[in-house]
Length: 116
Image (cartoon, rainbow, N blue to C red; front, top):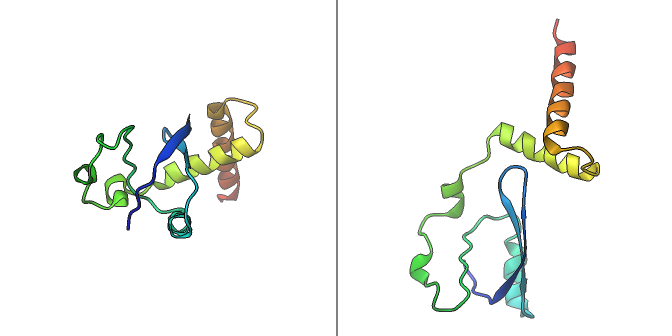
């Protein structure tokens, strides 16, 4: 499924895992369009941006499923991303790399304590 909407790019922010958060705003949407978008939450798809309608065409959209191109995160990438969210929720006072190393060290020590 797909939909075509005029939208404005409102915010771009980088994340610790080198991905980006993008925030878009649309015009007022009808029920079907809104329902479609709400049904796409947590799904992966293609984002094709053009400032003018002549900038992009249907031919620019890849045939492959988006998740087949990006693949899944490794376990270590998932752990790092979760620790990053924890760091943000705790107020992100120190640098993330320092928090990450310290947090991993505490996990390592907990596991070592369980070894016989």
